[in-house]
Length: 142
Image 1 (cartoon, rainbow, N blue to C red):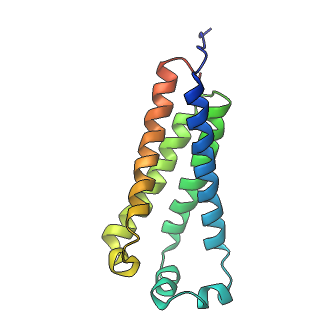
Image 2 (image 1 turned 120 degrees about the vertical axis):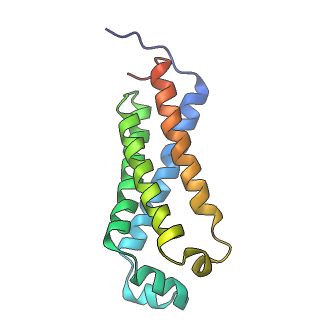
Protein backbone atom coordinates (compact mmCIF):
# COMPACT_ATOMS: atom_id res chain seq x y z
CA UNK A 1 0.00 0.00 0.00
CA UNK A 2 1.29 3.45 -0.90
CA UNK A 3 1.95 6.03 1.73
CA UNK A 4 0.14 9.31 1.17
CA UNK A 5 1.91 12.41 2.41
CA UNK A 6 -0.17 15.28 3.67
CA UNK A 7 -0.35 17.96 0.98
CA UNK A 8 0.69 21.49 1.96
CA UNK A 9 -1.92 24.23 2.26
CA UNK A 10 -0.87 25.73 -1.08
CA UNK A 11 -1.81 22.42 -2.79
CA UNK A 12 -5.42 22.95 -1.67
CA UNK A 13 -5.38 26.61 -2.68
CA UNK A 14 -4.13 25.75 -6.18
CA UNK A 15 -6.63 22.88 -6.55
CA UNK A 16 -9.59 25.06 -5.50
CA UNK A 17 -8.54 27.99 -7.71
CA UNK A 18 -8.01 25.57 -10.61
CA UNK A 19 -11.48 24.09 -10.08
CA UNK A 20 -13.03 27.56 -10.08
CA UNK A 21 -11.07 28.36 -13.28
CA UNK A 22 -12.39 25.21 -14.96
CA UNK A 23 -15.95 25.82 -13.76
CA UNK A 24 -15.75 29.23 -15.45
CA UNK A 25 -14.65 27.36 -18.58
CA UNK A 26 -17.63 25.01 -18.29
CA UNK A 27 -19.94 28.03 -17.99
CA UNK A 28 -18.31 29.62 -21.06
CA UNK A 29 -18.79 26.40 -23.01
CA UNK A 30 -22.44 26.10 -21.98
CA UNK A 31 -23.15 29.74 -22.84
CA UNK A 32 -21.53 29.26 -26.27
CA UNK A 33 -23.08 25.86 -27.01
CA UNK A 34 -26.59 26.96 -26.03
CA UNK A 35 -26.45 30.53 -27.34
CA UNK A 36 -29.82 31.61 -28.68
CA UNK A 37 -30.19 33.06 -32.16
CA UNK A 38 -31.17 36.38 -30.56
CA UNK A 39 -27.99 36.45 -28.47
CA UNK A 40 -25.89 35.49 -31.50
CA UNK A 41 -27.45 38.26 -33.63
CA UNK A 42 -26.64 40.80 -30.90
CA UNK A 43 -22.90 40.08 -31.28
CA UNK A 44 -20.62 41.97 -33.68
CA UNK A 45 -20.58 40.48 -37.18
CA UNK A 46 -17.04 39.09 -36.76
CA UNK A 47 -18.11 37.18 -33.64
CA UNK A 48 -21.21 35.88 -35.42
CA UNK A 49 -19.02 34.60 -38.27
CA UNK A 50 -16.64 32.99 -35.78
CA UNK A 51 -19.42 31.09 -33.96
CA UNK A 52 -21.33 30.18 -37.13
CA UNK A 53 -18.22 28.77 -38.82
CA UNK A 54 -16.65 26.87 -35.93
CA UNK A 55 -16.43 23.18 -36.86
CA UNK A 56 -18.06 20.60 -34.59
CA UNK A 57 -14.68 19.07 -33.72
CA UNK A 58 -13.51 22.41 -32.26
CA UNK A 59 -16.67 22.67 -30.16
CA UNK A 60 -16.07 19.07 -29.02
CA UNK A 61 -12.45 19.93 -28.15
CA UNK A 62 -13.75 22.89 -26.10
CA UNK A 63 -16.15 20.59 -24.24
CA UNK A 64 -13.44 17.99 -23.58
CA UNK A 65 -11.04 20.69 -22.38
CA UNK A 66 -13.38 22.22 -19.82
CA UNK A 67 -15.20 19.13 -18.55
CA UNK A 68 -12.04 17.00 -18.28
CA UNK A 69 -10.34 19.97 -16.60
CA UNK A 70 -13.12 20.38 -14.04
CA UNK A 71 -13.22 16.65 -13.31
CA UNK A 72 -9.42 16.59 -13.08
CA UNK A 73 -9.50 19.35 -10.48
CA UNK A 74 -12.16 17.48 -8.51
CA UNK A 75 -9.86 14.44 -8.67
CA UNK A 76 -7.06 16.61 -7.26
CA UNK A 77 -9.30 17.68 -4.40
CA UNK A 78 -10.14 14.07 -3.54
CA UNK A 79 -6.44 13.20 -3.97
CA UNK A 80 -6.73 10.75 -6.87
CA UNK A 81 -3.81 10.32 -9.26
CA UNK A 82 -6.16 9.88 -12.22
CA UNK A 83 -6.37 13.67 -12.03
CA UNK A 84 -3.29 13.63 -14.28
CA UNK A 85 -5.06 11.60 -16.97
CA UNK A 86 -8.03 13.95 -16.99
CA UNK A 87 -5.82 17.05 -17.00
CA UNK A 88 -3.79 15.63 -19.92
CA UNK A 89 -7.07 15.05 -21.78
CA UNK A 90 -8.05 18.63 -20.97
CA UNK A 91 -4.69 19.88 -22.30
CA UNK A 92 -5.22 17.93 -25.54
CA UNK A 93 -8.63 19.62 -25.93
CA UNK A 94 -7.09 23.03 -25.25
CA UNK A 95 -4.31 22.43 -27.78
CA UNK A 96 -6.77 21.24 -30.44
CA UNK A 97 -8.95 24.31 -29.96
CA UNK A 98 -5.94 26.64 -29.88
CA UNK A 99 -4.47 25.05 -33.01
CA UNK A 100 -7.71 25.72 -34.85
CA UNK A 101 -7.98 29.29 -33.54
CA UNK A 102 -4.41 30.33 -34.33
CA UNK A 103 -3.48 28.25 -37.37
CA UNK A 104 -6.60 27.10 -39.20
CA UNK A 105 -8.76 30.20 -39.17
CA UNK A 106 -8.32 33.96 -38.91
CA UNK A 107 -8.61 34.21 -35.13
CA UNK A 108 -6.21 37.12 -34.66
CA UNK A 109 -7.89 39.44 -37.18
CA UNK A 110 -11.30 38.40 -35.84
CA UNK A 111 -10.41 38.78 -32.18
CA UNK A 112 -8.22 41.86 -32.26
CA UNK A 113 -6.48 42.29 -28.93
CA UNK A 114 -8.15 39.29 -27.30
CA UNK A 115 -5.30 36.88 -28.04
CA UNK A 116 -3.94 36.89 -24.48
CA UNK A 117 -6.73 34.71 -23.06
CA UNK A 118 -6.07 31.65 -25.27
CA UNK A 119 -2.39 31.88 -24.32
CA UNK A 120 -3.28 32.00 -20.61
CA UNK A 121 -5.55 28.97 -21.08
CA UNK A 122 -2.69 26.95 -22.60
CA UNK A 123 -0.29 27.99 -19.83
CA UNK A 124 -2.80 27.06 -17.10
CA UNK A 125 -3.53 23.69 -18.75
CA UNK A 126 0.20 22.92 -18.97
CA UNK A 127 0.70 23.97 -15.35
CA UNK A 128 -2.16 21.75 -14.13
CA UNK A 129 -0.68 18.69 -15.90
CA UNK A 130 2.68 19.40 -14.28
CA UNK A 131 1.05 20.10 -10.90
CA UNK A 132 -0.90 16.84 -10.92
CA UNK A 133 2.16 14.80 -11.90
CA UNK A 134 4.29 16.57 -9.31
CA UNK A 135 1.62 15.97 -6.66
CA UNK A 136 1.60 12.26 -7.51
CA UNK A 137 5.41 12.04 -7.33
CA UNK A 138 5.38 13.71 -3.91
CA UNK A 139 2.77 11.26 -2.65
CA UNK A 140 0.11 13.91 -2.08
CA UNK A 141 -2.35 12.07 -4.33
CA UNK A 142 -2.55 8.38 -5.16
